[in-house]
Image 1 (spheres, rainbow, N blue to C red):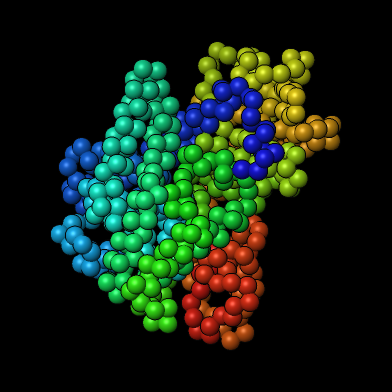
Image 2 (image 1 turned 30 degrees about the horizontal axis):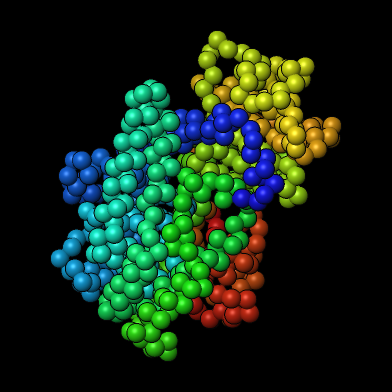
Length: 490
């Protein structure tokens, strides 16, 4: 998170910072209830004992549910089978679940459950890179590191139940469980290096290019470096990625390279199976899944919950598990959209004046109607930031749209009001026509260049940089005629 945005929320009442917790009761939870039902892939329910199945369902639901793609599932399982046969424990059995999350993450539990997000799968460029991740996680199981994760997960589930039972708020319990996902990536440096060494050995013995680990760590580091907004970092506590415990530091990459050299020389590295892997991920959903709400330019759209709004010009939006966050290019303005529950007998004007945020100027509180929805607005002022707040009653929830500015000028206040007036109901036709972004595999022609293929990408910014990272290329690299490459498109 960039410092200006971090400063925006620092010092505000805890109620505001936790406001997104109730978004789990609105945006996120509405999605999770639908995603949690088919949480496991076919056969997974029967393969797990009841207690493990229940925790599996909870875990998968916290990552947006399972992502079902039989072709991709089979490809991953084939890679896992090769790795198991070449591992120190060929007697172990693994069950693979693809998680419907854009986060870049993978982890394993000691019962043999392997989890990998579609966000991670979209970054890998060949079977060797995929194998490096899976072998690393299998190494944690083989070395008994993953037992720590299981204990942490049990503790987190217990905490979530206590919160739910004591305060009678299942959404806060869900938030505790969501945040507990951070613990799934907690290993010591020594354990990580040991898993690196074991994993590289497994990949090499299975016939895969052992340098895949170095390439993938490098790609992840580059991807983290171009995250287009500071809001990604603000959500890190709830959406930890693989780099949280697998940092692509120069030291780590050099150690992985040294491990790989023990098994193969760079000029004879082993199999990559690039075309086979790219074929398996063709059509993979990329970024936000529409059913969880998504960003297109300066517009946020949630077809399942049935609303949309457009940020002021110059804002970049980020959809997180707790809230929609936004920041201007200057870093001097920001916004937050989340949902809370407000008693039906409390007016929205009363709610804005109730003290959940300090510095409210009572004289600015006013009731209004936004596109047919009851609403209220007010101004609050702090030492460094001023806020134009809106509370909008939509269905059974109240959405808080909070704009912040270093200098809340009349012109800027008008722009914030205009943006609030774009909050409206989504038509059935609009919701039915929503399409997610997907990875599309295209073949390079004779005249194609990275710039040409990048121009075909449906992304907000840095199209060329994103194309290069997605395909493991550097600036100045030429495309291979007839070779497949990833682009992002509907």
